[in-house]
Image (cartoon, rainbow, N blue to C red; front, side, top):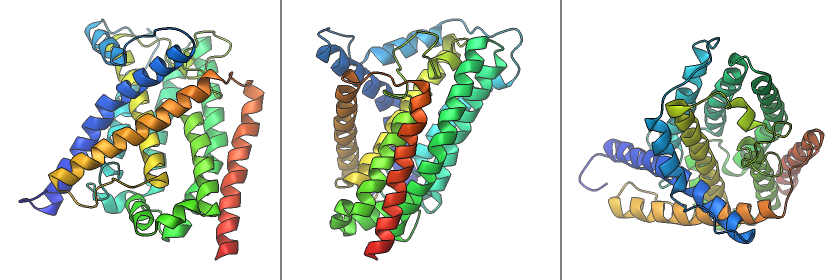
Length: 320
């Protein structure tokens, strides 16, 4: 930003990113619901309905199981906090975020993993059968997605010779043709499958279901109410938006600011919103035509993601 030091400008830009992810996350979920309802022949709720629901939840009474420990109230706060920290260091609107030197893909993955792990522990902490079932399934899916994600990071970092996210985005901006290489395409395909699995979307999980035998994420948060449930809802929407933001900037980083000037940040936010909205609509259209796969078929899907990531690494070595 003009007139101030680059460090302060990067801090302000990162703050803008956090606000954009926090507000844009529920709006993205609302837009995806709206698209699904339209395709199913229904009017559907307004796009801003998730924000209204979150406001209502914050005004309601906080209820917690009698047998729950300190993990239960900590999990929603940790979920939102870890996603917010990830949004601070991730190149969403600009390639110069605060603490950009520490914006490593491994750091991003394990920041988000902290929130997911605590939420799974909270499902167990509630002491209910469905909470334990949902936590078990969520941890199983996470354990299967982790190898594919790590190999995907290796494939993505090989092109830029770095696992630093801003460096990868800047390298892509400098060499747009690298997006179309087999190495990058395989890795991005694997990353998209992992994002769908980690965010609990179809065909891995149905975020709209309340059928006990098919729930994964919803089963873990059945005992949450009031402000705690609002935080979980905000955290999950923020995580989906953040992951899709990382994906679109790796696929098409054009529009991302390379400085911290006000005009560049504004253009970067506009480009980010447009790209994430397009991917969100595509995912919503895809979900309408897909049914939730059986739990025992999910390993096959994530194994396919691992194979794609491995092909990305191998193709990178062969081309080199």
